[in-house]
Length: 148
Image (cartoon, rainbow, N blue to C red):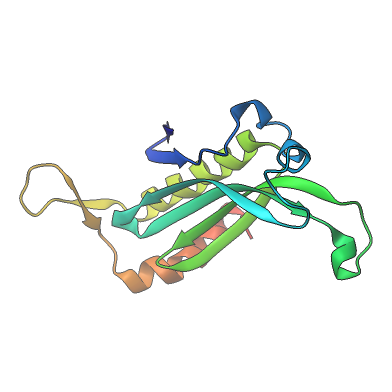
């Protein structure tokens, strides 16, 4: 299953259940995600900008690490630019998780527009900034947008 999130195509895993988009704990209750573990639900990428992201669900039990607090399940988005982790965020609903993905990618598109194809046929080219700038820029991009 695939769908579009702004300019990204999201490829969904067979374990993804849209009816649980507001209830990540259902993945634990139904045995899809084990206690204290995580599972990827989807993957997306923008190869021209060396960007990829995973959407998933995680179960966290603070007692496993000797911490106080209740065990809980949350959705996550892990964002990568240039092969490096740019961010990992968790949210109570998948809608919020997808919104974060879309905001991050839109900011990346704004910061690193694609050059036209060298053949002039209008197909996607490459990012106009050097690879080093894309990688170092991801940290400043997160700070500018308030993403940590």
